[in-house]
Amino acid sequence: MSVTDALRIALVAIRTNALRSLLTMLGIVIGVAAVIATVALGSGVRDQVQQQVSSMGANLLLVTPGSRRFGGVSMQTVQPISEEDAVAIAREVPGVELAAPARNGQVQVVAGRANASARLEGVTPDYMEAREWTVDAGRGFSASEARSGGQVVLVGATVARELFGEADPVGQSVRINRTPMTIVGTLKAKGQTTFGMDQDRTVMVPLPTSRRILGNSQVAPRRVDLIVVKTATAEALEPAREEMAALLRQRLRVPPGQPDPFEVRNLAEFVSIAQETTRSMSLLVASIASVSLLVGGIGIMNIMLVSVTERTREIGLRLAVGARRRDILLQFLVEAVVLCLIGGAIGITLGIGASAAVAKWAGWPVLVQPGAILMSFAIAAGIGMFFGFWPARRAARLDPIEALRFE
Image (cartoon, rainbow, N blue to C red; front, top):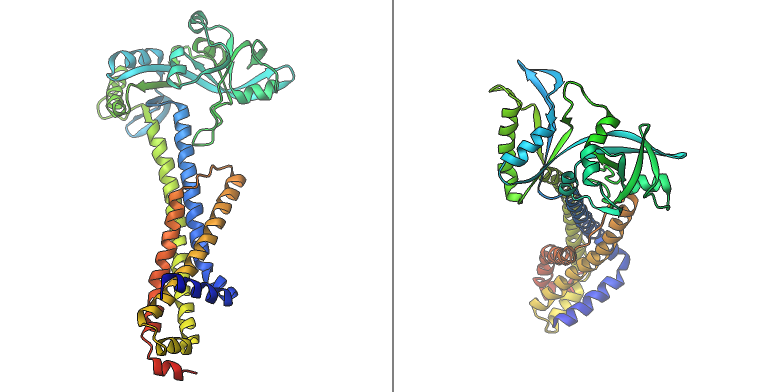
């Protein structure tokens, strides 16, 4: 018996018991659908995380102030970092290309009767270069505006849309916390961060201007909320991080044994956290899918054993007229594999549909991998061969005489 003959016989047997075959495939269908949906959503989320982190800038370290502790007790006072610290980092830490100080805070932006809540960032030209912000329309800050604190502002895409709709915002006047400002440009859209923050709900002003809008401390008039540090290469991030921490401890006069009154964060850590979360969820769903596939495989074995019992006389007749035992083995093994492959095909279709539906509902990206489809077919075929072998072997080892007597 050829494989083609065995395939034809298998299709006839499946079509004859269509409902039973469909119910038998159900475990395979659910398992394969779960695998496809998991891989599609996991790949999409992983790709989105990479894009979001890339939009924040490459090879970045973020320096932020922290609380100082005395005797193990937090005094709740923040040890400030300053513009001079940024200058020192850029000058003294090897591998650092840019060290850009920034102020930030939540503000209300008003234009006529429209208003929008936004994150204000007081920046320098180096900050925009490090964070890879580009001007979409209009212009950036001039050297004199950046130095002296001109009353000019760059607005993000979300803020521009909420204030002006489809109209051109460049040249328009707005008030930021009651301070009159002129829009000189709009920022190119960046979308959301890994943590769901809308980067386009941002307005940028020169760093000196931000001090007037957000207020300033008389004790530390040059303090900043953040220093963005850009290194020349990704390999330079960790060495620069260690050198930077040592330099800041020296500049801030931190006593030996005391914890750092600042934090230095690597954006790559955020990527690792997001990817680890995605990986854990994928493993959880994959575990559920594997149980479903196991149950489906047991169902295949069960139904094939029933099929062997129902067709015992047919098997005996085939053996009596000259069929070889390997022909019987091939016939039932092919039937089990075909059952699983049909279930796999249905599961792949449902998995793609389910992942698209979840993506549309949750706003997640979907990336269907051809490799996942091929893997699902291979898994389905493997389950058919593994769980179908014993029933096929049992059919092939039947005694022809006893099989013909079977009632």
